Image (cartoon, rainbow, N blue to C red; front, side):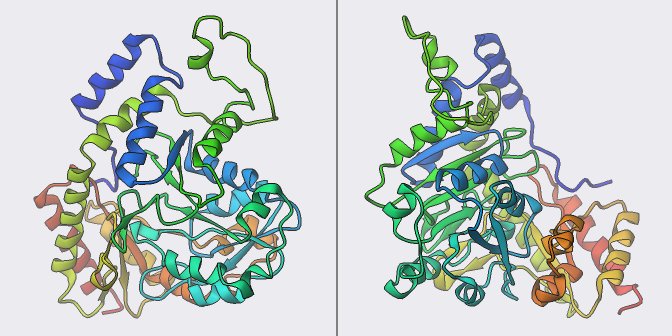
Length: 406
């Protein structure tokens, strides 16, 4: 069986984790701080906070901005549930909008229609590693007519004077938009380093801060470090310094800091990330070349030369033309029967039981449903061999060509 997305763990990572374990420092410490700096250097953003998960990072940012009851946050209907769950945790209302037909990303026109006096945040999602059109979003919310709708309730909101753009960049570490890497495209961008992501720390994530003046990103960094560690104003590394044992708790914070064990994995992966991206690009391009001659294959967007933009090649979301959800599911089963693991990204959030109980209906998001109903994600991971790539392509062709639909 060709697996879908196993993590890339080799002797170099094992040795680096062993060094961390032998060092006696395994929680948040020097490796985590170094990883934060290296992420900022790689992406070009002002400051980076490493956290226990991308989900935690999104919620920390919403709470830092003061999002709460009565507020609304705009997000795509086509995303993983975590994007919406953190809004619910804060007591705010998720406002789902439909997506683009070509790239699965949030529709700018639908964003404009959804903005009102309750809107505090827009959370675009870089699906499969393709960046949303951040310049278009930021230009629109910075217009005086849009800013007049914004009603700040906190110091942070009053200082920004507009809707916050918080990027769910869980898929897009290393992606490029108009010549700039993710992490620099929104006010804040949140990466995921989960086991199936391009760059993994087993579990984990990071908040890339890139706020405009008058904000000081280093000051926001310090605030978020406190929020991620119970509201404690010193972490274990700081308390270890001579005479620095005493600490204070300045807020009722959370426990979602990254450990040095996780950072040890991340530092190795980041040091060779360009090679990881190159391999993932190669795999996606091989899939595209192998499937392009078939009329039933709708291929994903990998690059946009007009915008000097490229994906991080996190997923290869193939769509099968002229099929419905049940036929797509049958095709998936057929591919599994050929010993190839595939997946679907994602069940749109309004289709999930909890969100149905909140009154959301998938029929209100026809493009999201249409994309989902035809989507099959093919395996993309560093250790995938040429022979396995060809096996995947042949399995997809065989099953689709022999299905009832074609």
